[in-house]
Image (tube, rainbow over all chains, first blue to last red; front, side, top):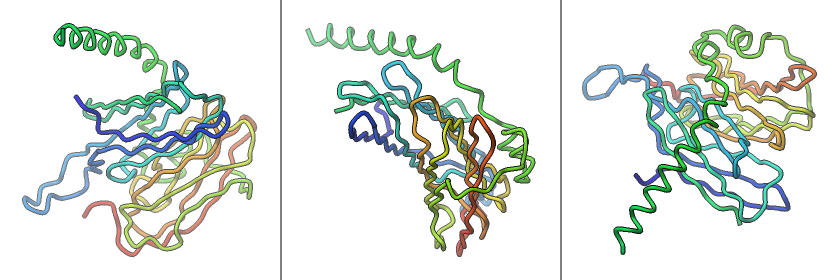
Length: 104
Length: 150
């Protein structure tokens, strides 16, 4: 399945500046469906993990308070052109998505 | 020939998935108790062991002064503190104040940005855990339209 994650990584020296954007409703569980009046069940990304080649460089834990279609950016050292940066998320209902990009 | 290539590709995807699996098991568990807490202090005690932090100007917390839409409030946190282990975002007046927490691994810079939801005007706190203590910086964000459902 095609991934719905967008990832951009900019190298400056050995530092990678990573920006990522995911498609996810991030439902808090307290929002009412405007048509039915029913509560929309809680549905959110729980964990986002970045690995560069085989090294984990970031683990982000999200609550429902992260905005819909989450944005997340961070920086790490020790990056070089040709490295494979992989990002994946899992959500509270067992959903997941991942994508990888080659640093240049 | 195309079929052969497809088969080969799908095989390598399956292999990559298998290879990635053990690494995922290594990731720390999602801190469910801290995220379920309805008070900021309780959330911090659950996640970090204490709610006592040392205020510092070595943390740069960038948030808007006024958020017209509480559903999307940009937050950027960076720090010049050394040996940072984690950065957390705490929104005192949200129904569940612990918004997110980030593990800063060796080689990773303590410099993160994301976007969060705020139900009402509140202090937003950046809590930075280092190997020698817990530090924080706070700023108030005025919310004109809440972003926590309803």
